[in-house]
Image (cartoon, rainbow, N blue to C red):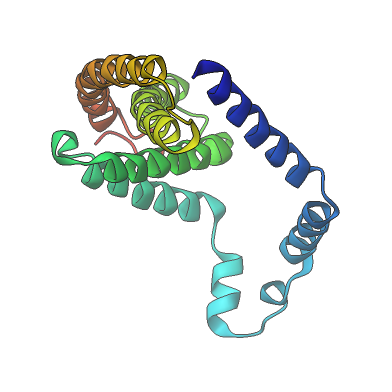
Length: 193
């Protein structure tokens, strides 16, 4: 069973590397860079477009981070009630917030310790949610990608799923604890909560 899972993982990585190395991906990156630098939005004379372009980046960043943080806090308020799909969506939102914080963080260098604590709390939450997602994905893969032809394969699969379910409860409790750390972390881009 383990060998077949490893083969499936290796094939998935190969597909991902192939996509990143493709001509289509390179074209996408060039098109994206051109749009960022000289897209129609950058030349529009509409009042709203001009106002958006002239808006201070720090204000825009703070508002964007506030929205993302609010979403993570709202979705994670009752982790126990979330199913696998809900926890996965929360993990994606936490990842999106973390990337945004890292991207915009140079704009907010006046509170480096608060910034580091916020990012650490967010990373720990994301790690716990990622661990639970790994368990859910692994179980799904085992059931759909591995042929369970022999009693030994079935027994191995049952042991793996059983261990994963036990680990999932530990990760859920850790995620609840980490969520509280994230929830109470100082919002370095705004001042104290």
